[in-house]
Image 1 (tube, one colour):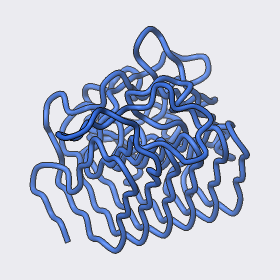
Image 2: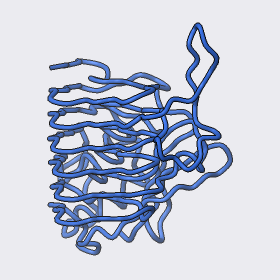
Image 3: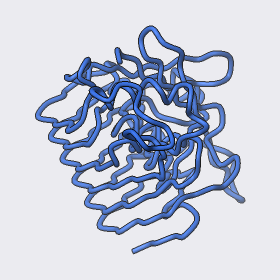
Length: 281
């Protein structure tokens, strides 16, 4: 068990080679480190017909980024390299990330949004299965009497997704509870992801790898499997690669988008890669 009063419970920024994280209890009460986000990456919620809100690609509880490429990668021309003291810099093959059977508990008590609670990314494959993850914040948003009240009491989730665009700095919130990225394949199955009702906009995003590599190396190419997950809020997944989505349950959704019809794409303005979730409110 790892429990941190302040700081991430697990932080691997530049892994090279297979990484397996299983059977742990990972607890953090927030990581208020300034400028600890991934370089040149951001998260954005861009609702249809409304202004977007963007936050840095940082995590509150867990961050694991693997930069070793897949054995069957189609290109490795811009893959990050590792340099040993007695050798020249070279790319590393075989960077699968396995995150399984873990219990994660996180809190984000500060105002202003954070990218995610749990960030998992690999230039190879990411396999995320059978975890239980809980994420809460001290958001002052809610029903009548709260510091920031629902704009539409009959549609609280729609109100939250709408109002956070203009009140991001006044709320304590998470863009997505969990981000799973990969360049080869992303497999997310059998997880229970639990958020407070107005703590996270989304429970899970599954898409491209987050790394210093350019889009030709880090874009998800082979498969995206998202099955048998139970989440508090909607997931957002990419349509790249062979897509399998089945038997998932999102407990809370907007009444105007009950089937969680959101999509995740990559927008690259200049040197920054922005992971963009889009959909109707």
